[in-house]
Image (cartoon, rainbow, N blue to C red; front, side, top):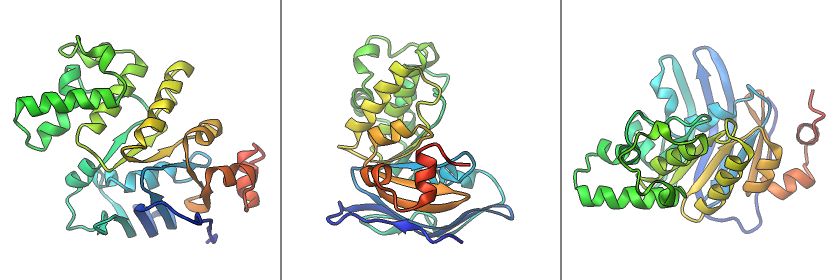
Length: 265
């Protein structure tokens, strides 16, 4: 197993989560190998690396998405701070985990419902019935997703009528509605045009004032633009972790430099 090179900041922000000796198995296949990594509060951490290296697998451990499929297994811990709860503990309800840690996927996936009901969905799952409260939360989430001004008079229309970029911002608003502590982005702009991509990147930068963000991206320029910290992964291992500027300007590992400069493989 490769020993990770982890460069921690001199005056680190507060920790929001921390993976410790995390292994993950798809059946007998070990997809993640002993990953230990900090996640700092109100910062953007980008996960980079070639396809199949474990980025999305690692990301989905944080909100227990793997629990939806049989035969998957975790070893190690992911602590959510400040209460130090181990998100992978079997006694922790994965539904509650997904309320605290929301996810935005690669392709926009609006529900076949109205714009309003898409955003209100998580609140209703949580059992909220107060109409005024739901309306206020939906408006706040749509504003947080930079979509309110475009849809405020269309809330009863189907969400599938929105453009691709609008649909992705709707999914972000849906993720925000339950007041998550962390948002996971799994290549959120790969299906979008450059203008929509720019809007999402600006939104990510704005959102970190309120939430902690983990983002998987294949786009090195995007990682450099939006992230504060970068983790380079390869074959299920964490190769190098550090501040974005350090990783891109002076990586300590040759493997990291080769990947960032396009000499990988």
